[in-house]
Length: 177
Ligand code: NI
Image 1 (cartoon, helix red, strand yellow):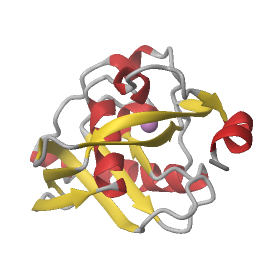
Image 2 (cartoon, helix red, strand yellow):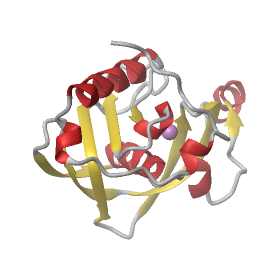
Image 3 (cartoon, protein in one colour):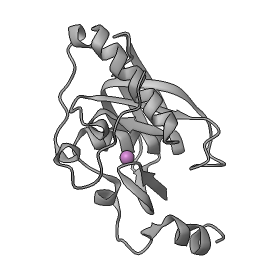
Image 4 (cartoon, protein in one colour):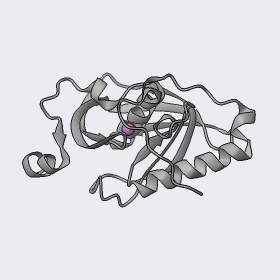
């Protein structure tokens, strides 16, 4: 396994629409290896999610996991999940605002509105169909990663930039509130 290089904001790959994977592509040894590398890369950098375009591959794959994460302490746990060709449908009009960060936009946090509840339809890494409902932080992470596949980053979703902060200032001025 290997740790992959992360594309940072400004790299054109982050603004492209990612291509869906064919069944054959998903089952290839190369793709299995790549998904393992994505998982390892996410863990190495303490991400709670990673989209393939963030490691320079414009394909519709995301991985997510929330365990004991030093970048996001106190967040509800999400098991390791691989979503291929995901479709997201909001199940509510209700938005929640909360903090997000992104490995492609290092050392920053901003408050982002997201749908509170979404339905997720995707393939898992073995090509099996999965469907589930995600709520709260879980739904937030999925919407963030799904945006990456559509060439968007969380900054595009912020209502305004008044909360946008470097990590040091975030900890000092916002976390305590
Ligand atoms: Ni991100």
